Image (tube, rainbow, N blue to C red; front, side):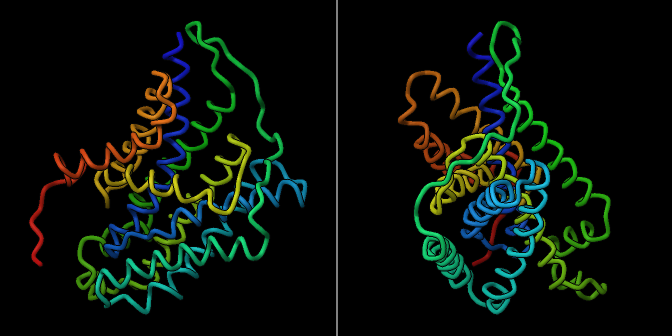
Length: 291
């Protein structure tokens, strides 16, 4: 039952993409910005988790929480320093700034610590279970469980809490939300904090599962997470979750078919097809936009 194993591996990988994609889709839903520096927040979270484990001798869960907290603060700093001054600027100006911030984080990290690879220590239990004749690793199941828990917590925050209601109000109509007494700046900062915390968690999970991390590691997963967000319908939280999981499964299927060299290309093929046939994404609605 090789397909069962590939399916579980694909869903586990897809859950990592989904965690990163949530940051893209939340920020876009609030301020219509594609934050291309988001993949590099994922990279920073991975390194913070690594140094927490190696330098401080912490376990996986404490390192995960520290990385999430640090990335939340980092995300707010990025928003306040780079994006807030451009709140009323053109979209192209904000987009160029996002690309510039991305390069700054990548090469700033290389300047500070060098470009060498680091290897995550073994912090996750590595057992195998026989499921319908397939050997499923406990690491895949644990990663999937943690990712699902984080997504459920996000849904509770967005749907049930005061800040979540404020985020939905600002997403729907910023000016009306401001007139109703909602602090838009605080809400936007909270959105960046939550999205960056999820990216930090994805970084630690990725490092613990794939072991190798380096300063440019956020580029490809970041682009794939963006594809996942577009696939599900950018600006729609459930869409980012489903898009990430689907993308992970597709990559696993491509690898299982013997085309592992084409695994990364599959994401871009999906992006092209979704933009041609359903540009609003799986969960989005076609709307006309005045230019």
